[in-house]
Length: 198
Image (cartoon, one colour):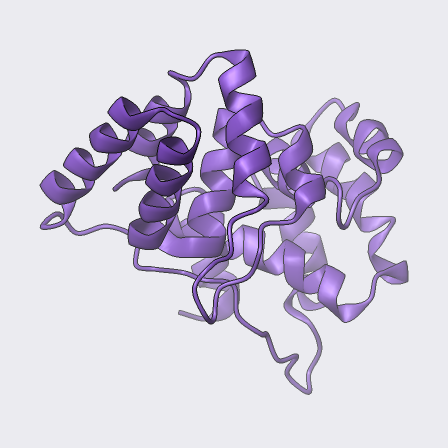
């Protein structure tokens, strides 16, 4: 299943149903080697952010499977079947490969986020999506609000990077993972591939 199809399905949920979906999603025990979605990120997530999180943490196929499981659990069997039908129909179409969150190892020459600070500030295009994914576990609500008020992507990234020197490695890993995820879904692909030397 692609990003667009999953998003369209989640957008069919009413406000109350969407909240039930998030509540149930936070209780799901994922398969081995997959991580729980951060409950703080789920709390204020809209359908777009939920789609990003599902695909980032679980990949395309398993992300669709989890979404269908949650929909059945909240008595939305018709939408669960819609996801399963779309998944079956799209299975033969090339798509982003499964991309579960894994441990990242910092190379001896420094973290990606530090090495490419200047280019990331100047060229990341989907800053709002990155901020929404970081909100709750890496950014406090106050930090998120402050950065989001920036007038441009560059200004928002500059504000974000004011925090980076105080981050631990795992917090830098989250930013890198989100940038890599957005590259896999076409956004910022050229930038990440260039900086990774691919």
